[in-house]
Length: 95
Image (cartoon, rainbow, N blue to C red):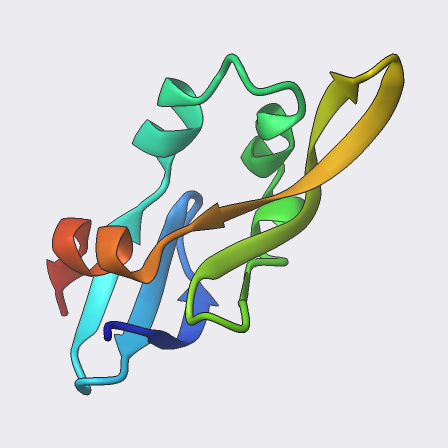
């Protein structure tokens, strides 16, 4: 099972991820932000301070807390935004 062990935000919209197989890959997040622009709140990741708050979740995913806002049964619900470790590994560029 692929897991991200650590991440480091570098240039705007790039993360360097260390995986449980000792691979180190650089991942461009901007295309994801742009492709998910329909998600209310995703634009927060364009802010460098918010972007730098990326962390590794319990399942080895890349996670930003409380980014996406939706309306569910008439109530506002705030969701985390995450990127699977498999996606990060397959789409990252070897460092």
